[in-house]
Image 1 (cartoon, rainbow, N blue to C red):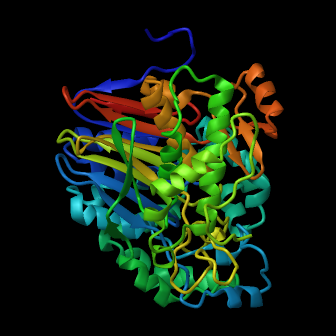
Image 2 (image 1 turned 30 degrees about the vertical axis):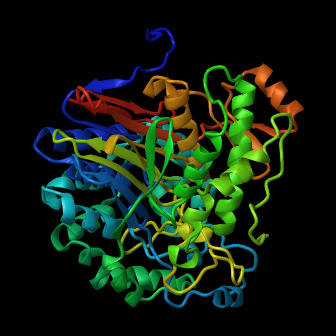
Amino acid sequence: MFDFFSARRPSTLASQAMIATSHPLSTAAGLDVLSTGGNAVDAAIAAVAVQCVVDPLMTGIGGDCFALYAPKGGKVQALNGSGRAPAAATVEALKAAGLTDEIPQTSPHAVTIPGAISAWCRLHADHGSLPFDRLFARAIHYAETGFPVTPRVAADWAGATALVGQDEHAAKLFLPGGAAPKVGEMRSQPLVGARLREIAAKGAAGFYEGETAAKMAAHLKSLGGLHSEEDFHEAKDQAHWVDPISTAYGGHDVMECPPNGQGLAALLMLRILSKFDMGEGLSEADRIHLHAEVAKLAYHHRDALIADPAACPGVTETLLSDAVVDTLAGRIDMARAGTPALWDEPEHKDTIYLCVVDRDGNALSFINSIFHGFGSTRLDPQTGVLFHSRGASFRLIEGHPNAIGPKKRPMHTIIPGMLCKDGAAVMPFGVMGGQYQAAGHAAFLSGLLDREMDLQAAMDAPRSFAHGGVLQIEPGVSEAARADLAARGHALEVQTSPIGGSQAIRICPETGLLTGGSDTRKDGMALGF
């Protein structure tokens, strides 16, 4: 029985349709579309458009997008809506511009050509049913007349004040008077509303061609970027469908988008975890230790090998092979924290997620991101577009698979997920949180399938993440487990803000009942009818 004194929310139940997002206005917009005849794609586009307005730290029309779409009874399709580097971008050119080891978040070189609008338009053309002007109505209204700032958005906004203040145009829009908004304050983004009107009228051409594209290219160039109008024109149709990659886990098939996304790292984690008994008999400390050691191995391989698919052929088959998985699983010592090493390859030295299931049984797992909080912080004052920082993932190492190059896509952290059973989709799911996402997929699915936890409980459970030389833990991890982990050599770092967020909708194959959850770490919710 659910503990009604726990201050947690139970999972949401519905019989016909459901949407789960990390913002209440976004969920409401999607539910409105579903309840008035729209399908899963329509609802997702309406919801993400709202969130691009009301949650500018996490997403925007200047970002990238990935999706997994499962038509009722059909094959799961993966949509890659990630942007490419400018045609003039090379390691040599960026080093000549003064960069050395990495591309900073606020550098114009961190801005690849945004892919989100191309993805929305591709998804809508192939599977949508309602016109864009209907789907964008609420987003345009909030952009032009204002929206109340919610608690989690306000907290994150305040935390980014110093960074946003470095760009005069971003500061003018997001920090009027020099301060972030308080909870309940009204804010607006009228220029984003104007861009949505253009996209509704002209489709992707309204963003990637004409005056809007010219202004965006000119602004990035004025900051020292290598972007051209031609780069934007060519990006109009850059989103494309690909086959998902998958692995078996807990009697299900877990589907992810292939590289250049880090979904492969999530699958590698699950493959290694499958070599251990992850059931309820495992102690809290052992469970966190195992997830930490597996994450270190998977992320080490991610950073060395995953890139634009043209630059890493065969990497999926190699990393998910029995030889690699067995070798990596054998390196884990339950008594001590280890240092990751590659299998046998040469060594190289923020976001919103939503999911929808419609009345016809179509399921969509959808993620849209500007990467860091407020992306690159670079705002074009003429178009209102806040550019993402996805190019910061590129390496400046000649010969590295993820080295920046002309029209190349960087390794991506944003990954939608889809759980299937006997060939049918049974749960679109996703975990937000930048680098955490692959580890988050593995931890969430392990809780759901290994421990048979309730969906909402699985996503609300205390989180941990081994990354950057430390083991991040949330305050909910017990003192006994902390002492045990420290004794094994983990450098613990208790987090002052939550690790990521998540949404999921589980479909019962026998009854069609929908069970939804939306992470209590965010402002959102799952709603259905």
